[in-house]
Length: 260
Image 1: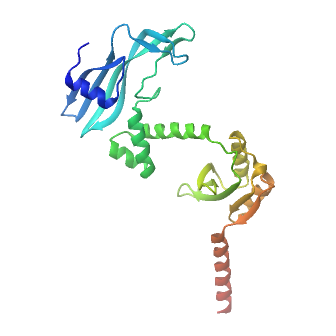
Image 2: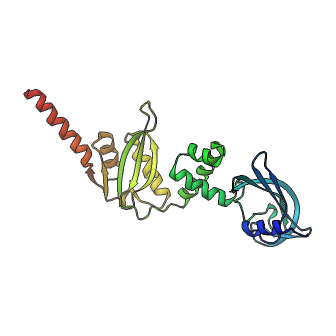
Image 3: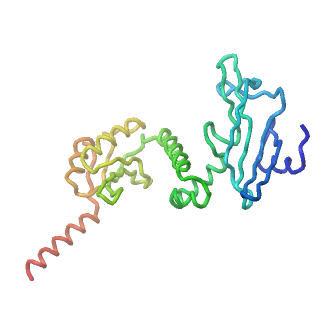
């Protein structure tokens, strides 16, 4: 299959490797879109996703991925995604180097989207990228779940706990943080003692141990105190100075009013 100079240039820019080649480039100026089609030569072999054994394509299915913009043009990759018939693992969809399985975005686009969502809101990222925010939420959820599965809490010894309002109607969420790293470990609806039960379960699922927690920093909420003492009995409770200052200021204000 003979390629044009333009195709070779884009192939180098995209990092496309054998057996994949760029077979077509279409520029739609009216829609400000660039469409790049990838293909492979007849008889090409692909590694089985399970064992990496080279197999020929069993059949193919057309797929499209959103890629990083080229200049002002939205860019899409199109390819016949093959399935292979592995002698050991049966029929499997091959993995492509530019995207993760099941995603409608390339890896480079996902990296940019995650960076934007970190710096702004999902809605803001959707406006910048010109992409549906529902798709970005699915992307964000996938990587959060991957990060949670890989989380190791075996070294967590010191915590900070606080609640925050998630909506305008006093719907509260309790946050559990690792104080040395200042990272949020867990968030759960509510602000009662049961939140400590949920966090204890989460800790055990990620190689942590509630009995190894040495200190918990929190406010003077009776529910938090009860939950901490019941489910983290070895932890020293440290009350947040800002909440203590608030109580002192309220007490001084009451005395001032009574004296006046």
